[in-house]
Image (cartoon, rainbow, N blue to C red; front, side):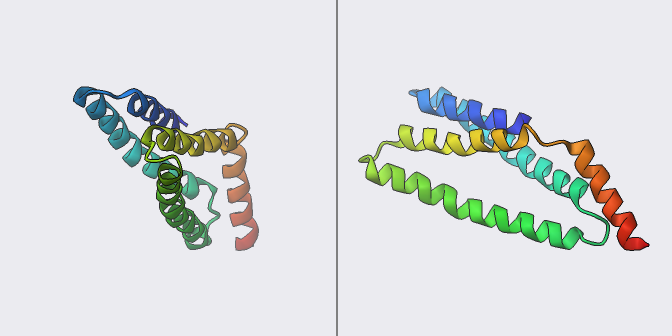
Length: 126
């Protein structure tokens, strides 16, 4: 969740950026968020994956990553094209993906998911 908030902060800074310094601040926020969001996502998949089904869960996670690598740039490019090269609007639209992720993550109960993964692992081992 923290990394998504950093991504949103980067979106805000990038939107209002008019100087080289502001751009570099946005770029550093993106760099911080990029690595940590990838690591946090991988760790969360590991917590939710039952023993013996890790490859299945990581495969689905990897598919989602590849899909986002296509949908993000395509939506940014399409919005930029449709709006006559308005990159500020396109970056705001990108921020909507991060807001959507926060909405999805808020009700997520990590402890319950981890317990369910252990329960499934125990059931499959028996």
